[in-house]
Length: 171
Image: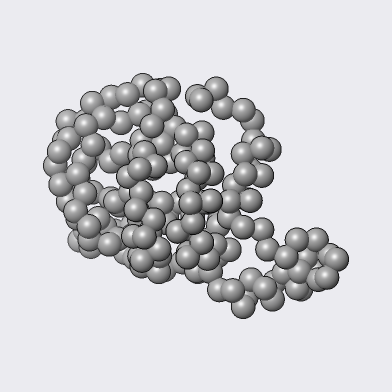
């Protein structure tokens, strides 16, 4: 997505394999940015499709438990997420993401390693639960009347993160 960093050609470009998580057919990209910090292109036919990589980003960033997957279908989420991708010099482009597939596969387990025989080890991570989230807000006093915000949306949290992070000269 960004021209910053060293872009290298990939020897296995065009080779295909099923996504480790959802099974969708993926193709090895022609190039890879060595400075990509999220949604990096695989250098071999193995790993996650871009949609499952987006879902995994929510696990890694700690936002999975507090994000209602249905909210990801809103265009108000796409623009801030695209800004995060740009800031992180993502190999993927925002147009590659199929948010309906991200939501559809939200609860699938992730591959977290492999057995000595090469079989994938899968793990399921906690997902958004509105009752638990509202209960947590009330216990901390943030959801109480007159007591702060009741529920920041994902796009609000991303916008705040972008405002508070150091400026990126990749724009």
